[in-house]
Image (cartoon, rainbow, N blue to C red):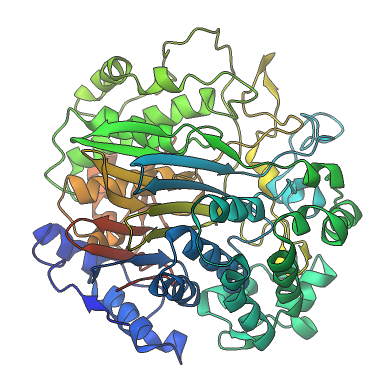
Length: 591
């Protein structure tokens, strides 16, 4: 495999901003030692990320959260497979080597650009609430919301998984390789064992008490009561058997039959029992939805609409900023004031209006209407932080008497960006929600806790919350898989994990690339400064902390914390340039 490393990303595109980004974030994986025995191409890609260089290729590229998963996708692309084929292989491998973030027991959103037709398609593989769920699913006997982890751990939080159905749908539409062959690399590694990565080991250790709540889960992650260590060889024959079942019988083998029965028994038999049924699994469907696109700096930023809030909120942030000059860069306090308050305005609208549009009317057109955004952008014209932020009144043909949402969203998740040799582009964000999901394991994979993305309350002062629990409904998401187009052609594929901060991470990466001229590796490495609900979160240990006093002087509440995004970004032009977030273990690889 031929891998070319870009040495120009540091000092040409973006200049000093790129240098600041490269210097500012210490990678979580310090060099190649964490992945001994990897191929020379992977070693070079890891070294490039640590050095702050983009990876450059001519034909195809894949960027994802673990080198083993990236290699699986790269092998498919090298052999002439499409981005859809590679996506199946990458997701199957991520479910093995990064099980805390995504897998067969979760859900995903895909944005796809088809080179043959020039069309952008979005597929919704989000989990659904069981048909027996009620709006009081996460309330106690007095109608008060449960504490978050009281709701998460066990069967109560498990929604109908969508990822296997999405994998099959993507392959049926755009794949060319044999289905079973795409699962074989993960099957072989599950049978033979893989080395536990530093990130997985650290997360297992930090969550050991909750992982111990299930015997099956504890036996895998805490053998003999001891958390697995980095470098341990971990065998998962149950996962290999599940993949063999799906390889032979397709996604139907997941949603019906013995495996479906085991999933239901696990959920309903848990201490904190859930209501998922075999009927819920049997009736699950992936939904094609209209892509949501918003203009920015002469580009079209396209992503997933409701039940995701990602595309609308990212589009709103960028639309609010369109009329302002951001060229002073990431360390300019005025630039950060504008971005922070634009985000707050978008999150205010998000909290009131965005939910599953199959269940409630969602004013997507009104929220992204240029006239509406121009009116809202006038609020940014001052010189200090907005004292108060409230939802706006977008145009719509229904009454929108919703209360503001109160959902709790904690970061986990994973993102995959792929470009194949034909020019097809895939941007998929995939999740089981909280790290390790519900902590229930069946068939070698973890089940999601996705239902806790619903609001725990159903009403406030008699007014319903749009994102309340309802049977069959899909919980609102912040996932924002994105493809940016210029003159109808894709120029960027990007997305990130990170809970509700995903929106800020993705919008920030787009601004870094388009406004600050940063190469993709510099853009994903830029220190984070994220404001959702009023408080400004600055990434600890980075140059962003230097903004604390200036932002406080403008009236913001400011805090510093770890902001562990997982941005994977590919720029598409005369060549392909890939960047992988230094805060996680992923790489970009191409030829």
